[in-house]
Image 1 (cartoon, rainbow, N blue to C red):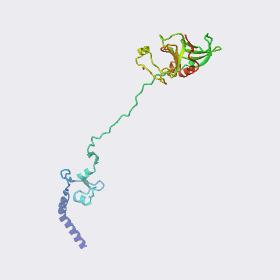
Image 2 (spheres, rainbow, N blue to C red):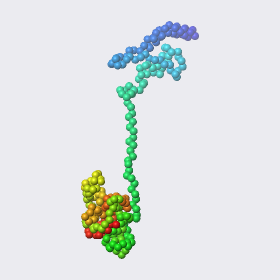
Image 3 (tube, rainbow, N blue to C red):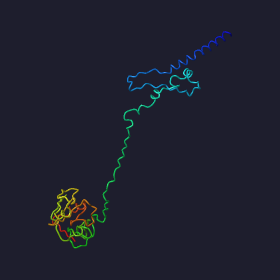
Image 4 (cartoon, helix red, strand yellow):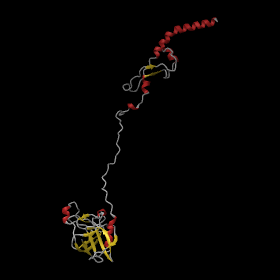
Length: 268
């Protein structure tokens, strides 16, 4: 019992005598050693460590006791250099602040001007066999300008009737002619009078689907008038031409095969 008492007394003396020295040691320890970097101008010395009391430990009074029993691996305190190293690196990259997302608006197709709606073809202008009580003999072509019909007289009180387009006001005419020539997919050379009215017209156009004379043409005497096809079937039944008699392409092909050069044509 006496031995234990003297041992405790010696320990207390040692603690009382050694505490000032421990405090001095603590003061020396907290001074961080100088760290040398390859480029001293680009890398400043690390700042003194910042001691932070651990949140998950009881208050141990700080100082040497905190150092002995605290977490010396970084949980008890962190230096300014350690705090800097935890920051993201990408804001430090050159041009980071200048990077911006370029927004490109989607390409929106612009509305296009569509062609005007064409009137539907009137069924009454379809090719058909009808009653004919006129005085013209079989094989005669009769052009009924006011009603926009062309008749091919067949005899026995019958005629093949076609819908046609005729001359505009001021271009209509009447008379008796004969078919002087026939041509398939004819070329078109607008006459001087037409060029004077429409300077935008071509001076010559080869025959074909885009040619205004259409698939067939039957020339009337020595005039510039023709019975011809058209690439504008919606104009059948109207006053549209400069004096020619126009038909749908399928109709003019049919008529072309039924008449010959010399056929009599009566325009009323």
